[in-house]
Length: 393
Image 1: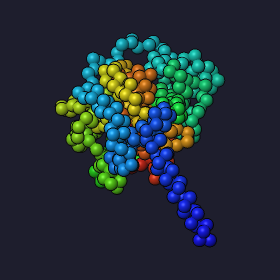
Image 2: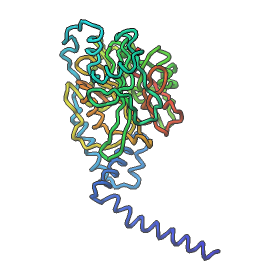
Image 3: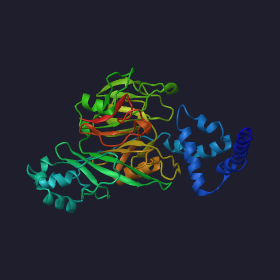
Image 4: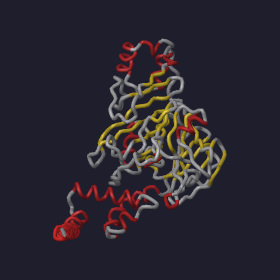
């Protein structure tokens, strides 16, 4: 028995030594494209946190970390001083004459031929006219592929259209730079005046789930917004990080240091930037990085391939608010990079866009239920308690 234990210990020691002398150096220094992408993803993920950078710094040489993080430094340089400047939105097209034409004018992203075919097969949706269409085909939020027979012109499957509320929701699927699949939802909100920042009931003390904030504000749609203070992993979600203004009331000042204020002004423009004068904003939070400023993609070509659950918000020149939530850290969706988020925003015509908090915070709620799948690292299927959310009232 002692001999068997000795051989096992010797074998374990040999295995450990092989890992340290062969596998470990290989993973650190090999130029192999597949391994290097995963190495960069790991370093970016660890260094992108406030409390878990030690997962990289303990056993990865500083020079390797610096090489990877240089991409982030270059990204920050592109962000410096960038802020929104609107020349005006909406009002470009005359009002269509009939309810049907007004519907397609509003939801210009719809593939009209497909949508008309769907209505012919499902006439009950049109019984009260185009101005009252309410289609909700969202079933299991963990499903990756839906087949509703309707797509947007951008090629994404349409899951919900509500004419009275001015909301269209589509499924987003694809592969990111590591060849891993991602899945999420994009909501197109046609009435930017209805988008506000709602806050949790216990602001500065304890957070609420996005679904709770949706209910508290009698909203129909909501996504998570800013980050929150999480000192040593013990945060309750109630203390927002950075600037916060809700329905015209400023509740917290900005932190700056490269972070962007993201929110709507009195003219319902989405503004993104490090603004010194915030008096014109009605609802805003603070996060980073900006994705698109005045039509310019600020993150394209950065090479950052960190794939995580993501949330982003943007606005097209016609006023459409674009809300994006992509699942991550799960079998059906590994996550998505910041660069790919910007690409989706561009696809839907974003003129301004920014990231919001991601990770376990990422969730979209529609009509009283979560329609995305928060990361399995969450303690609750609803995600985690948060300080605020972008809501559609």
